Amino acid sequence: MANVIFAPFDGMGVKIGDIHLGDFPLLLAPMEDVSDPPFRAVCKANGADLMYTEFISSEGLIRDAAKSMKKLDIFEYERPIGIQLFGSDIESMREAAEIATRVNPDLIDINYGCPVKAVACKGAGAALLQDVPKMVAMTKAVIDSTSLPVTVKTRLGWDQNTRNIEEVAERLQEIGISALSIHGRTRVQLYKGDADWTLIGKVKNNPRIQIPIFGNGDVDSAEKALEMRNRYGVDGIMIGRASIGNPWIFREIKHYLNHKTHLEGPTVSERLKACKQHLLESIKWKNERQGILEMRRHYANYFKGFPHFKETRMKLVLSEDIHEILSILASIEHEHFELETA
Image 1 (cartoon, rainbow, N blue to C red):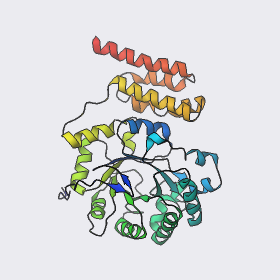
Image 2 (tube, helix red, strand yellow):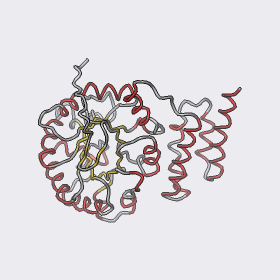
Image 3 (spheres, rainbow, N blue to C red):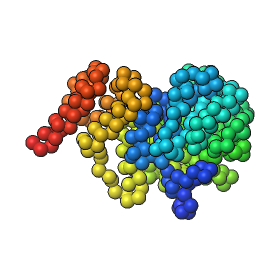
Image 4 (cartoon, rainbow, N blue to C red):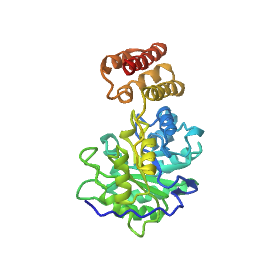
């Protein structure tokens, strides 16, 4: 087991530019097809301190592509909120940052971590870990194009032989980024194996690093969050997949960090409330048909562990009528109430 290298908090709290995030902020990771405004709404309601849009293509923005422009939608209740951009062309990223700045987010984030082939094999996302000079030049262009704080999310390196995050962190800090989030895997690993936080801890505890360092990868419980904070001394934790269908993870972690006791898990009513909020926000943000279709991927997560849920899930997935869906959701609460009082 690694030595504990956690340093006590100094009471000043974590800041990105002029954004105050508290002593140990919990961040919602940007996730394609997941962290849209409806999902962000339920995470914010449950304690997420900083959230990001889904990653947005710089080429899509400068070409005014409808899908990319829609992802710029942000709302006052989400603040602080960052817009995350990705791309392979420096000039396109500069222009995209200018466009994103106009919608008045709290910060701009650059994605240097996406491992999927459609992104990395086109020279964007984690591909920039293979060309640090270009990464530095691209980041500088974005910083120079906006008055907002610029942050970066990346990985340990491209593969096991090129884990260059320590160099990356110093070079990006030198040109003016305001914070760095690090996922504890290489690009080649994708999401396989365990996240390695050792290098994240080394970056954080490098005396030359003065910006906030956020750790990301495999934090799926309050105990894991406390362990990562105490062992590696990170300024905060970014949570991705563990929040899908489980927005309560933010409040559960906060309670555990503050009181060292477990907060009771969400009740059936709370699960239904969050699910319905997510559904109705999806319909409001898009339209009824699109909102219903996009919500289908979330039902299994909201009701994970419910006995005999498969049949109910199929009804939810097959229905295209909002009133019918709400009726099915209401029946879930009724069935569980009867089970609990039997």
